[in-house]
Length: 190
Image (tube, rainbow, N blue to C red):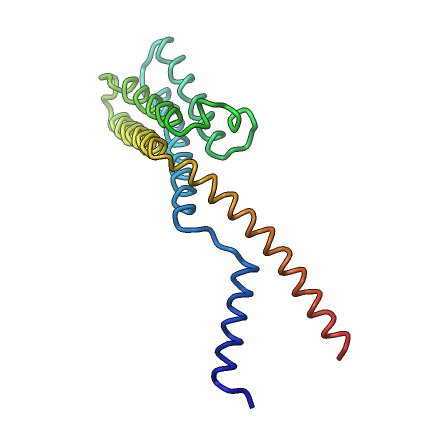
């Protein structure tokens, strides 16, 4: 008969094995991922806002070119946040958080400045202007957050957490492989 103490010990070991096989990110690591997602969504919405500005505003060629430029900067911000290319991963300006924050803030300020005109007079146009202002301020907020986190050296902490998480994932693979081998041997002997 199995005692309560042995059962508790077995449950504890099973929970430990489960945690080893399924490592989780630390809360601060998850927060940094959330910041990156919010920033990418802000850049996407900023780009959509620029398209709306082109569609609803009667603008000249210079403003048209500026809006296209902001759209391209938003695409660059999205690619940077998703870390898809080595171009953005290896860029000193886009990789270092204080300069990344200044870059995102610049995109937001451009969005505010471009839409600070009185060409929005119809209902849809004022709604578009409101949307553009909100996403521009959101982009500025993301820029400020990145700048502050960068000055506080949180990027170094994120890099350490990423390395730790990768090591725990590798360890999980090894533990799972070992557990599977053990279970297969147990079944073969039975």
